[in-house]
Length: 264
Image 1 (cartoon, one colour):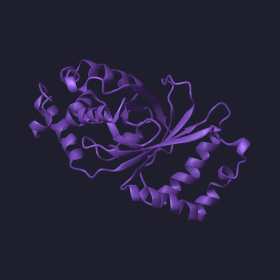
Image 2 (tube, helix red, strand yellow):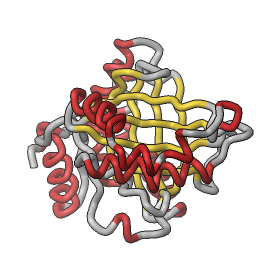
Image 3 (cartoon, helix red, strand yellow):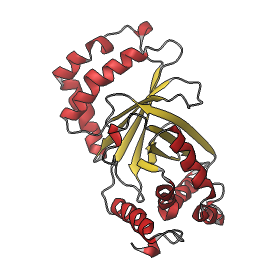
């Protein structure tokens, strides 16, 4: 492990240091991916069943045929405290150009058009959602590509957190990214907070921000992981660095559960 890259990772047992450092180092050497976080806002009259059927029967199979995977699909878990009803889809891309190519190929994919017919042919007054919002993330140096660890999908009790850290301006947003890159992720890993992706928003309704998705074995483990993070000695040091103060102006937090067919 290159200790100089993570100066705050201290006072851990030797095996724990190696495991955490190896995982973070492997990520830092990977190629940066892009992630679209697409949110279907159902509103008061949305049809969650229709959206689910479209995603499972049409969109995911079509994306997979183009080599796009893993694609995540999530709904709100019982522990989520947000009033709005949403479905979240997370789509990884190897390049920004690939995102454009995928969208164009969907238009010409006859199988997709047939599978999505009932969804795409609904009348405007009978739309299954109120609106769709999307943001495009670029993977950060600390976690540049989407990673789903082995056996994660086998755990039916797993829960996720989607967090968006909004900043007051671009400089403060870049400093929050720097804070993650310079030490926050090893603390995550040491506390049992396992990232799926971490990205800085290039485009979206709440820029500047960074957004990340993390997974936990169950709801109890999620609570314990964040309790451990808040008192972690390295976090106590990092959060007191003067230049990082005031880098986050607003936090959006969603506790999510995976759809049965989610690939994340």
